[in-house]
Amino acid sequence: MTASKDTRGFTSNLGAIVAAAGSAIGLGNIWRFPYTVGQNGGGAFLLLYILFVFFLGLPIMMSEFVIGRRSQRNTVGAFRQLGPQYKRWTFVGVLGIVAAFLIYSFYSTVAGWTLNYVFLSGSGQLSGRTPEEVSQVFASFTSGTAAPLVCQLAFILLTAAVVLLGVQKGIEKCTKILMPLLLVLMLLLCVRSLTLRGSSAGLAFLFEPDFSKLTWSSVLSALGQALFSLSIGMGALVTYGSYIRKEDNLFKTGVCVAGADTLIALLSGIAIFPAVFAFGMSPASGPSLVYEVLPNVFGSMPMGALFAVLFFLLLSIAALTSTISLLEIVVLWAVEELHMKRVTATFLVSLLVFALGTVCTLSFGPFADLHIMGKTFFECLDHLTATYMMPIGALCIILFLGWRYPKAEVFDELTNQGRLKAGYFRVYYFVLRFLAPIALFIILIMGILGNS
Ligand code: TRP
Image: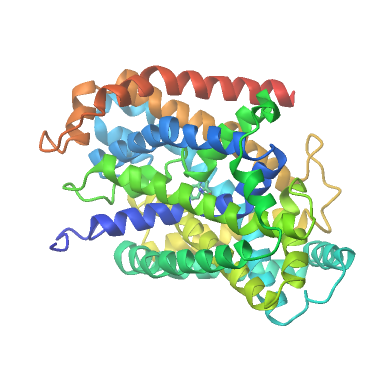
C-alpha cells in the first residue's frame, strides 16, 4: 500500500482504524463501563449495550466520518465547506469544540489519578492494606492540592507532546504502538482473573442476562454509555474522518472501530468481575470501583503488585489515546479556522485546559464545597457533557445528514463515488433518518426530566 501523498491525514486504513479506536477506547471502557454494568445488574444490560453500539452508535459514527472526509475540514469548518447553504449548521461544530474542551478538562483529572496509581502500586504503597486503608489512600490523594495537579499537568503535557508531532508522526505512530500494547496487557489481566478460584460467579454476572433487572433508567444508561464509549457527538470523529484516505471504506472502518471498542469493554469486564466476585466485593460500588475495589483484589492475589502496575498502566495508555483526540479536535480547529501554528495552538489549548482542569481536580479537595446546582464543578462538567452536549451534538449531526444533506451525496461518500458496494445503505439511511433521532430525542428528554 503506498503512503498517501497528501500530508493531511493518516497514511493507511489501519492507521485510521487504530487512531479512531484509540479515541473510542479510553477511561469509558475500562473505568466507566465496568461500574455501569455493575450498577445495572450485569448480563441483560450488556446485551442492550451491544445492540445500541451496533444499531445506533455505528451509523452515527459513519455519519461523522462522512461529514469529515467529504469536507476535509475541522468540525466547525466542515459544515461551511459542504456548501454555503449549510453555514447555519456550523453551530454543531462549535458545540463539539466546546464539549471537547470541557471533557478534556475533567477527563485529565481522572487520567492524572491513573498515572499516580501506576506509581503507588509500583512502589508497593497499595499492597498489604485493609480495604479502609485503600479507600483512605484514594481519598487523601484525590483531596490534596499539589499531587493531583502535578499528575494532571504531566498527563496534559504528555498529550501535547504527541499532538505537537502531528497526525502521522504523532497520533498515528503513537497509537499504533500503544493500542497493541493495551490489548496484550488486557489479555494478560484476563488470564490472571479467570484463573482465580471462584471466578465463575463474575462471568455469570457478566454474561447471563437476567432481564428482570432491566429498568427504564438502565436502558438510558446503556445508550449513554454507548455514545460516550464510541466518542460520538462532538466532532472527534468528524476530525478523524477528515484524515481518512479517500480510498478507504468508511463502513468497514466504522465496524472495526466499534468492534474494537466493544472487545476492549468486554475484556475489561472479564478482567474485573471475576476478580471482584472471587474476593467477595460488590460489583455495584460505582465510580470508585477501579481505584478502591481493585487495589484490594490485587492486594490479595498472587503477583498482585505486578498486575496492579500493569492494570493502571493500561488505563493510562487508554486514557492517553483518548485525550490525544480530544486535544486534536480543538487544535485542528484553531489551526484551520484561526490560522494559528500547530505549536501555538497546542500550547494555548493545553494551558487553558489545565486552567479549567485545575478547578475540576480541586473540586475533590479545597473546592469540594463549591457547588453549582447541587453538584461539584467536576460533576457539573461530566453531567453537562454526557447528558446534554453529546446527545444534542449527535442528534444535530444525524438530523443534518439525514434530512438536510442530499441522500445521493451521502451514498457517494460511503461508496467512494460508486466504487464500493453498500448493501447496508438502506438500513443505514433508515436508522439515520428515523431510529437514531427518535432514540436520541428520548434519552435527551428522559435525561432532562430525570434531572429536573
Ligand atoms: N470514548 C472515550 C472513552 O471511552 C471518551 C470520549 C467521549 C472521548 N467523547 C470523546 C474521547 C471524544 C475522545 C474524543 O473513554
